[in-house]
Length: 162
Length: 262
Image 1: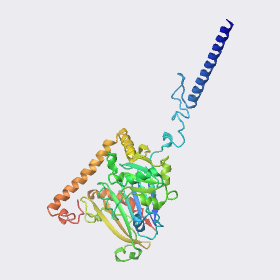
Image 2: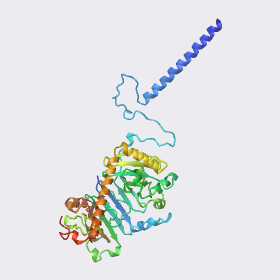
Image 3: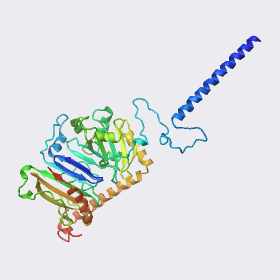
Image 4: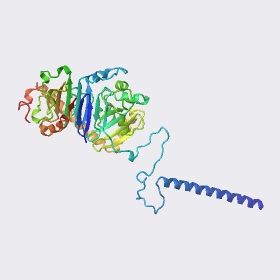
């Protein structure tokens, strides 16, 4: 059974056994706020989404540091990071729309925010719905990429942005 | 002589009253047992599936005391979905994974909960259970923003334990009071222990017993050992490489070039 979750204009379908968390920049800044200083989170603030087929630990970095160290060889971590809207359609984000499918050839051992032996990743910058995103996906074991990439694609293909 | 007869008559009358009272009391007990679905008739077919057959004894606890969970109340554990105290959204899979999860149902206002919020701020909170659980295996669940102050929960939420706000989770788990703790075995998809306590030590003891009763201590420790050994191995390898002047990401670690081959 899959769950569809939506927040801050991004929705995705989560397969069974996956964890996900939608965070945004304002929310993270507010973590140090004193009681009563909460206020409403502005929906236009950049968003960070982490989805993993393993238990996501607390205190993760934007690119999944803190989580990638805990993922096993069968682990898949999908990170969607939003950049400021002014970045959309700029050179780095010239690709239109998020990919609907990743391939094993897209994953490299060096494409990791933090190099961990055996893991591999891929990073795609794009613009969609006037918003700038980086899709960053980590596989727990590069040797198993042919079986893990389809697992990642279950989530990647379901991401939609409004 | 007349007096003796009168006394005997009174004694017999008194005994008759006592016997009648005992018979009536016995009848009341039998009637009550029958109402509870218990039959003392040796010819009664105990396999008969009466409406109460699956739950033959029911009763009420004193006001203010949480009733024990009944089998019919338990539809199995549910995954947790809710707001985060920082305004995000999170789903935590409690079932369909290989983890044990301790769900701590707390509120921002209750005095007893204050000690638990503080206890969960301890980095070694998972080790207190002595069962291989880590802080990643603990989830604090408060009621949703419609019932709880988001800013209060945000100020209480410890950095090392995930916290979500979900009134649905309280309903799904039929939480009677706060604080309340439920331990879920994600592999088997079942609740292995639950209860309340005034202090973390009491709750930890309760959960240790539940883990032992469920035979999960060994598995949890094995999981922890596997994690530790993996980390230890990685650290040892990193140290050896550093001593040899090779830092993480060094091209010599990837002799095939480009990293696209095995």
